[in-house]
Image 1 (cartoon, rainbow, N blue to C red):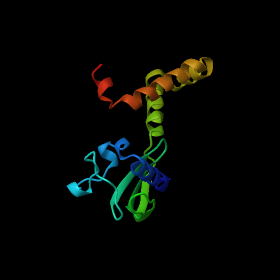
Image 2: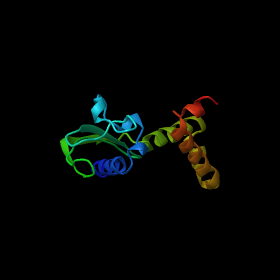
Image 3: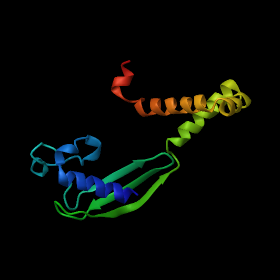
Image 4: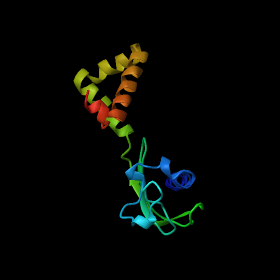
Length: 141
């Protein structure tokens, strides 16, 4: 899976460098002659980087090296991938456990069973808040 993400990023960089402008997606400590016309660094053959794939159930960390020259695609592992069960679903589990502590497990089970649409709405709203927790716009509200 991390290799697929790496190739997708390479594809977007090669297709239109201006679309990949987030500093978390770009290599650092790049000399001026290794930047494109927008002043953004390019992945070049031999560039090594760390890719972090933070999913719902796991977080995977991979270290790759670019094999292809400009316009070509390919990566190889520099180090064996690692990771663990640190995905966002564990935040959901802790949230539900907290609600059970506050309202009791029995009450939460009854709420889930008797009012399933409201229960799902609660979980959807929590998921929405998780996604915007570090968003500057939501922090100013």
